[in-house]
Image 1 (cartoon, helix red, strand yellow):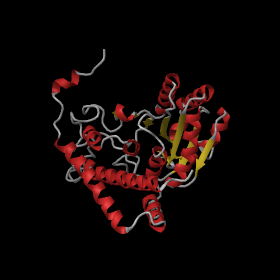
Image 2 (cartoon, one colour):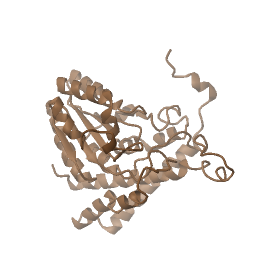
Image 3 (tube, one colour):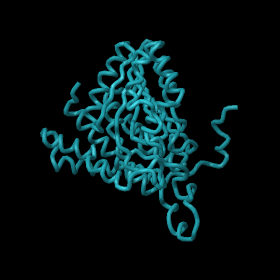
Image 4 (cartoon, one colour):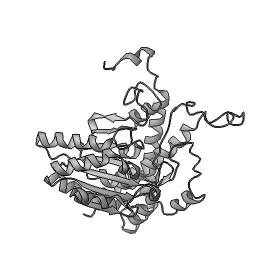
Length: 335
């Protein structure tokens, strides 16, 4: 399945938007967490600044999100992992409310109570979880609901290659295969499970090889290319909508930043991130669009300016929104 001109432009714009969002967050997150505190001999303060807590960013991994989500409708479900922003943006979660949630504001998706690893937006059927591997069985539940409702909706679970060693991953694959659920399992192989290389933690070179053990197709996309992801995902989504069951796709992608912001990254070769950026997927797709006559410099500048305005507006909304009332801590609590 070859992407249309409009699909190519959508993927390119969303990749630019995701990158702009993540690189902006990388700067905002460090506010209050760097010198002079460190110069005074104090440790990195994860609770300081306007965005407290951990922060996992996905710069470099944009092709996985856009290549899959280009095939989805608002009725399809996406369940992300603890590194979720690229999936949320590709699925259409509003930037304003998502950003406000990370700032802990009452205008956020979860009224400021969830933070960046717990983003929920029912209108776009998007959710994510900080628990490694938790999204696979949740996506099976959404797929089962679609089946019982007699709809052709699909569900997608995104997670890292480290999560494929969790019991929940194997349980979900077994159940999805047994019941022929309309679900896609998408593995983002960015080489590292936190700080552990895949080769040191996983018995198989790629997780697509595990799929035949459950009687389902396994596909490996061995390059960080949104078009290749689009092609693989298109066949899997069509299979799911036909009622033919699940597919497992592993994509070899690149994580430009640390596992979390503030990660010293001592486990990576010193020059690795810089080398990865020499084959940046946004630049490569932009070059392809120019060569095919789909994009020119003027259109690209207009697109990037519009993206920059959207992202900046979202961050301003997050900063300026009010914090929740103290008594709101007792609201929306189920006992």
